[in-house]
Length: 165
Image (cartoon, rainbow, N blue to C red; front, side):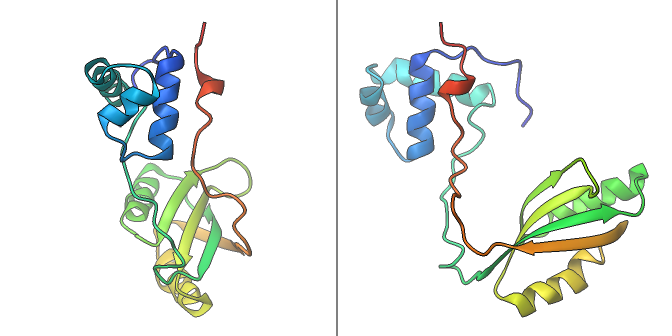
C-alpha cells in the first residue's frame, strides 16, 4: 500500500508505534494505558496510523528453524535483459515464490538481492537450479549463506524519524 504524504507524529504516536512493534496483540485498552489515553482517542490514533500507511500489517513472526528451514541465503541476481516486459514478468514471478522471503531491487553490480530460506543445502541447490535460474531474464546468480543471525528484529526506530516538536 503506497503511503500518503508523511504524517506528522507526536510523542504519543511514536509510543503507540513502538508498542505495536513490540506486541501487535495488545488490546486498544492496553495500548491506551501505555500511552496515557482513553480507549476511544487511542483507537482513533491507531486508525489514523493505519489509514496513513504507517502501520501496514499485523503479523506473527515465525521461527524459520522451528519450521525446518536450516538455510538462509542471500542471493544476488544480475539480469541479462532490462526491458520492461522481462522485468515485469521477473518481478511478478518473484512475488509468487514463498521461499523468497525478501527481495530488494538494488544498485551496484547486481540488480536484485533476495533473502531465501531452504530446508538444507541440497534443497537450496535444487531451488536455485530449478526455480531461480528459470526466472525470466536471469543472467547470473551469486549466493551467500547466513552463518549466524545476530539481529532479525525488523523493528524500525520510530522516534528518530518523527517530527516531534
